Length: 320
Image 1 (tube, rainbow, N blue to C red):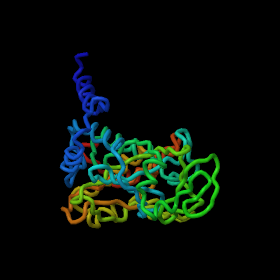
Image 2 (image 1 turned 30 degrees about the horizontal axis):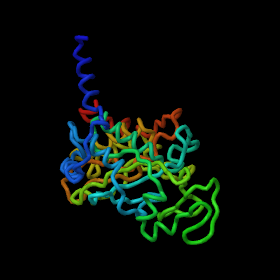
Image 3 (image 1 turned 45 degrees about the vertical axis):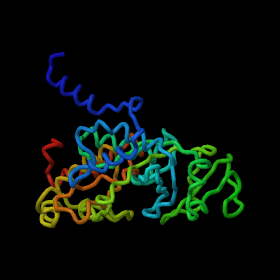
Image 4 (image 1 turned 180 degrees about the vertical axis):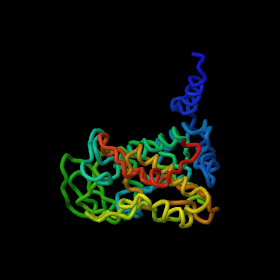
């Protein structure tokens, strides 16, 4: 085809393609250093990223040297240290691939595959604001438990026998519940026997791993029969948001609009707060972190997620 749009599309598809088979992961220290060098106030990875396949492959295969619970948040997460000292966050599989979340769009456990899909959508949209994520299958018995901290190991229940005390679970699966706000034995994560699938998210380098958490101007109330102001007043953005810092100048409101587009496409109605890099410039980007409450129901498209776009009537040129 001689159509210029064809060549543009082909060029973009070539850029997004990842060749895991050809990826060389032998120099893992260099690869982690490359990933760290990519980060700045407006991106987590660059437009051209030929080393990405190797970095993701390394995250999915490197030896696990240490495993700990990650107490932040309301759901089970593990903090793993890979060979070479690189930290990653592991979110385990909780549902079958075809499981549909009924009810509110933010209901249910985190979905590990949602984190993976959201990262690749971030690449497609060229936002570059989501940390690197890849899928990984781990053996809990041979890869996690031998290197687990005491506080994590104490939450494991192995094939009918608890590390801490006797407790039976069906099917002879290894289960654990971790350490978090709502972590308990009623909400165990269980493998298929010894093995569990999950997502692995690359921890940002120390210089870029301190965040400032801010309330989203379009936060929900999470209370039945109680609506937030933005849900009742279509002039909310013009009257309120556009007159409040940091939304009255700079790029932050444009970032909120970008996030609305991104969240609508992935079905994430749970971005009640957002993070930016702490102690950086006022134009530091809104980070697309924690996208696991996405892709819950493919038949439902939540229109309220687009409220910032609709009410503020603003969109960045790169998103147009």
